[in-house]
Figure 1 (cartoon, rainbow, N blue to C red):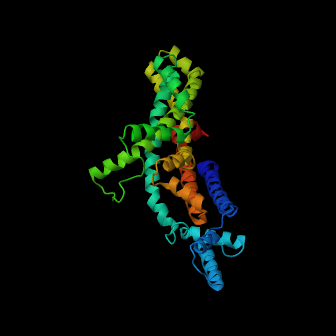
Figure 2: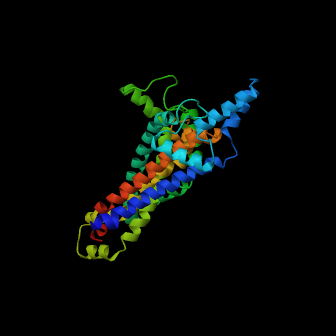
Figure 3: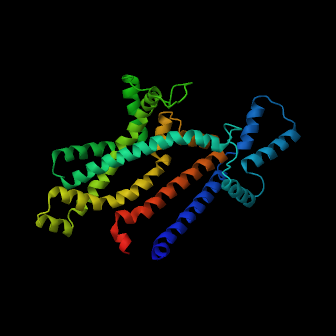
Length: 335
């Protein structure tokens, strides 16, 4: 009972509060944009020379307002939005009308999930291993070389690295395709040749994310390890004759990993930073490209659908990591 009252319940309250506030914000922000999707659609029809009767225009506006959840006052729209959200209905997309938003998200989510999950895990593991060893053996030459490389790559914007990889490996040396997630007109299947095509198209986007994120984790882990290795219990273990390998892995790196575990959950927010830019640069068919199209066209429903899914994924991952934290840190269990 003490665990539920002191640890689980406060985190569940924060979890649902963050979701509520986040979804409310994404409901309000699109309505502050200077783009009216309904007026844009009518304007396009008029620009194409289509004659529309004034009564037909009014009926069309009412129908589209109902479809996009823009009918009624702001409060009525808000209540209607929550009702549709609880049913998993985000309405139709504007720029791919009349395809439902949830269908577009289902099509794009596996691409982003596969790209992000793979690159995040690979960069987190490699970055923490290199950072842990580099922080403890900071006087080694290979650590100094990695520090120099990190100083160059770490502050580099994602789009600069992505464009550099495209020019080098898709134009100068045409080893990989310029963009896309699969062959044009092709169908993904569970075969070895299909998997090779997928990996070939995903290699450059994944490499651009991994290269930067490895050095993000490397620098952070190195600082944590340098701080931990100066603690009294580490010095006591050295004086007690404990093996150096045990000190490195059991005493130093294990304790320095705790903030990195939290950072792993927070890194899923890359869809709004590096992953979005990377997907656009490589024309990768993920949520980042879909979100860009939604912003560009003023697609309210698609904007709210993508950001709602992102909020749910990020907050849930943080909650899971927070609940599993006592398994990694016994000090939390003792409290």
